[in-house]
Amino acid sequence: MATKSSKKKPIKINPKNKGKFTASAKKAGKSVQSQAAAVLADPKASPTQKKRANFARNAAKWKKGGKKKK
Image (cartoon, rainbow, N blue to C red; front, side, top):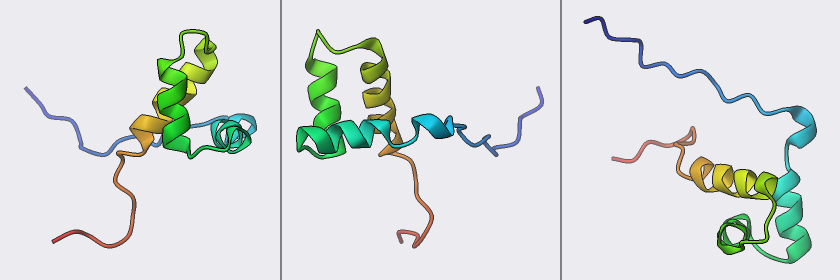
């Protein structure tokens, strides 16, 4: 069985949607991660907000460029 390359395609976010969750967090006076936790715990939150909150939680785990840990 052939293995695929480990290169992943970059995530494409529609430019008109960039920063919307961050803006809603700032409007609520919270950090992005605390707003994400609040949205995911709220049964009345819209499906769009829940998707954005889940994306924010997952994106926080991604390895950023810069210094490598030893």
